Length: 121
Image (tube, one colour):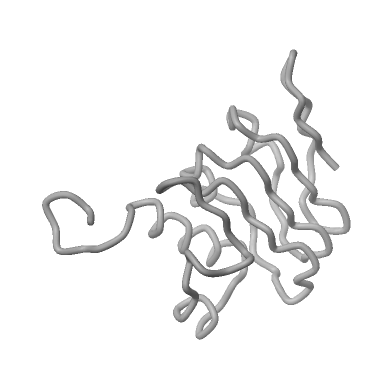
């Protein structure tokens, strides 16, 4: 439950749904998606730690402000999508360990932080 409301779930669920929409997931799939029971997302407690949209060539959204709300993100797979945007939006994500934007329309270069095991493709 979200404290002080009758809303059930975690606030991160709303941010996750908004980020998926921005990345190109459309209704009715987006509206009907059970966020906690899908291969597209993984959660740790109430935080999104993985987004896996790899191979979804039907997606033509963009990296934008919504994904920036998912600060605990560890894995982002947009391989083979038509998602665009600047990879540098993720430069302050401290928990990223794997990013695959190959064969997508994402541009820019994201360098691993010093002492990090982060893998970018």
